[in-house]
Length: 424
Image (cartoon, rainbow, N blue to C red; front, side, top):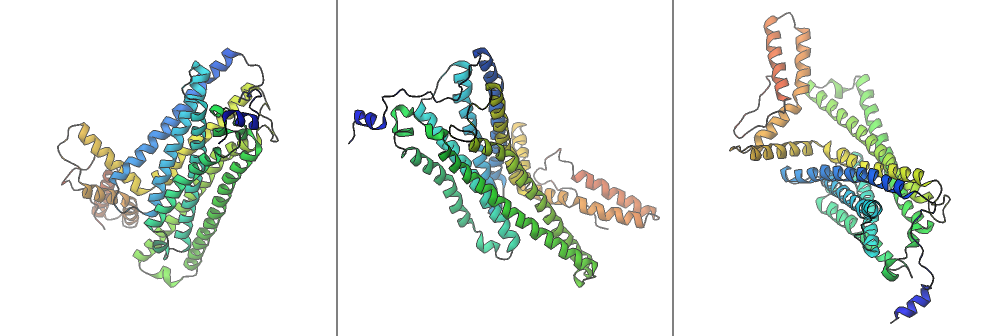
């Protein structure tokens, strides 16, 4: 077993340990203190906002019907990774930037900070893995809809989610402990130059760029498939296909499916755009700026670098918040669950005796979801038969009922029947 002296001789620890900071230019201490005190709380506040939003999404799972669909299951796990990432980022900004630079308070030693960095980088890889799994989940659902239930099962998704949560941080901790004379093998973890060198940064950035490329290819293929489906239906409709000569109910179902595809296409564009805008600047910065990279760490003045890093960190944090909206909050199950949770908390805080009837709430939700379609039918009948005043009055009453259904100012209570709309 090697002694401390032999390790020091082998690793050449007799030389002065370099200061692990990139600030080589002389900066006014008061100005640096002002920047950290002013802008670091903004980043921490954004992290708190992202954490709160994701906590609400995760708590809403208690009001969601079982079993969860694979898409919803992955989306909720993604919300958990965004919450975890936001927490680690906020903690890192607090103990590594705000407290030491703003108040000269040091709460963590170097080894703990290095472990926090391993967890943070692992959380980013975990998030990227969830995005890839969700992309393939969408792809299988569109490419092979009949085989989707047998292919994407709950147990399969659970296995993928488990490995996504455990493998990245475990690998990074093992890697940090295997680097000779650095990281956890150095005295008090004082040497971690590998984090600022191109070898590690290019490898880590390649993983993120590969994830972005895979998502881009998958969603582009989804885009092509959806466009082909829309073009085929339009061609059949224009050519007078038998499919479009069927009764109105079948035609409405076809148009509803087309509307779902268009919504999926819009969601796809949001996904790709948010990933590119949120991650690409930070990935490029991490890849291009290092001690032996194309751009040196002191490539600009302290002020320019500070604002640059501040902007990229803001985009990364906002990506976590927007992530949750795109993948979870746009889902109808999440929206209904959040509403149920709100009504339950409101009744308990206000001292209500009646508990919310879940079945009544679901009936209320489905009545509201079909209000727009019924209003469209009613208006068409009103236009074509507006000469009959009695029919016009009936239609107006039904439209008013539709507007009542869209009112979410009150929560349905137990044994309360929601308003209904009479079909004409």
